[in-house]
Length: 274
Image (cartoon, rainbow, N blue to C red; front, side, top):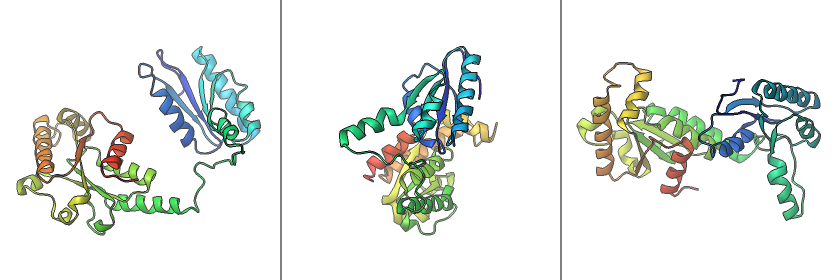
């Protein structure tokens, strides 16, 4: 997206690496301004002076189009590259200047200032654990497999399209947790119990539910005008799932108004995971 909206501004996430840290940092700040819409542009791998000059040109051109200074969130490590980008007419939010340098002063030591430090950990045990967790969660998505459920850190259950898959993957990628997820389907409600494969692991289960109207909207995008998406059916499934989880004494939460980050944090807290 290259043009800003009338009520917002253009925001650049600039990094010498993937830009994930800059984007996470920036989005957490922008979320405080709910009434504005921001047009997002990403400039990753700005790791040389010529690329810094190109980034500066892009930022300034966008500012001319918008008639307003762009906002730049930067995690550029190399001071020379960072200073070159800062020549652009923009509002610059430098993560290193804002956070790292004050800590250097307080701790009495220099930081590593290593390019790509945030995500360059391919040889670390933590990285390997995350990859294993992601593979586990993909293999156990949507009830595809019941093998090795004893290895799962948690098992998410809920009706179809209640947010199980994105939450599973987020927990795997961010926290290295092995997360399986199982859909609760009409057959489970007819039997009035959890799927057989989950019975030995009930203590690992955590439930997700959702407002039926929101669920119907989501399902309409997937299967328009189907019984699967019908509001009446969604109401029945959600009610049955919540009844089942209450009876089985499984902790659960509604995903209706929560972000993936909020859902994951709640799960970690309630299951008392690190």
